[in-house]
Length: 372
Image 1 (cartoon, rainbow, N blue to C red):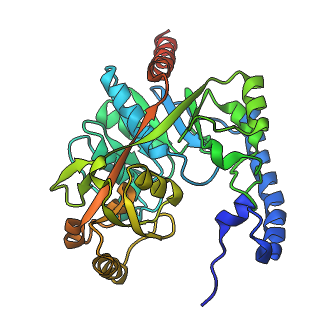
Image 2 (tube, helix red, strand yellow):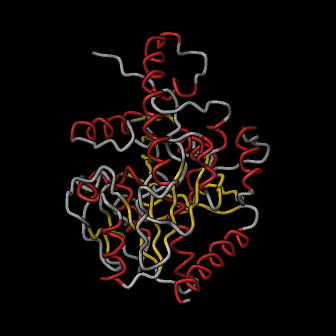
């Protein structure tokens, strides 16, 4: 069997990647060409040669400058609920990564009913659709099209554009960039040699930066801190807070604290599996097994049976996965009855009010300009 390349170790350059010397050299060469393409594309947008299309309502972009899980999905859910609470009619538009649909736009949820499955829509849009009541979720590769559909068909007056930092075809009124400070300490290589999608200096396009999974004592990379200070970009901080665990078929719910001291057999296929493991340990679960699959992994029947067998053999009290993984397991209803899903929410710390005031104030300014 061919050994898989451990890109996480290569990106993090942890000193244990000596066997990947040739891979790192090739990746560095490819990064040079990738950087040229990215810089040229950004130059075309910065000099208005490529135009950004304006939609008929304000747009909030939620994105990141690196690959991997910075917490965009919990952030989109938090923002949508915040806007709804403040009297706006938000809609979420997403590319629908991993979904099979080739339609120009796909209504995952009309705000009342879930209309598509994970295989068609993608796991993240389906997760958002389940979490957001009264808020449409629409996908499409060219996001200007689902954006117009959200406005025309559902009367949205603000759009949240998921994973849109690099999607510059749409003009954004608030450009929110998420950064996980722990994964950015001195390893600023461009893809495929590193985890950066764009050069670090492109965070100058941000209207605000949200440091995710923030812990006291975490030191941000010096280059990042200097750039943020020079551009005078407001910075907010957030944590991922475990909320509860629910059965995969939604038949039962209990506090996340119910895992304390319990034996857990866990698995996931997400970009940042370490964050899931740390969350389980934070609620003091006793991890007997922690199986990792590739990000957005589609589980087959054989794998589901292996997970069930492993859970039974381990003698664990709970079989636990993430919300995103549960979206990709909807085709196995009997398995979902045995499975528990750990749900987390993003919380702004220490001052949630200042973040909310920033978003609402800027949206009202946008609406005022449109009326003027």
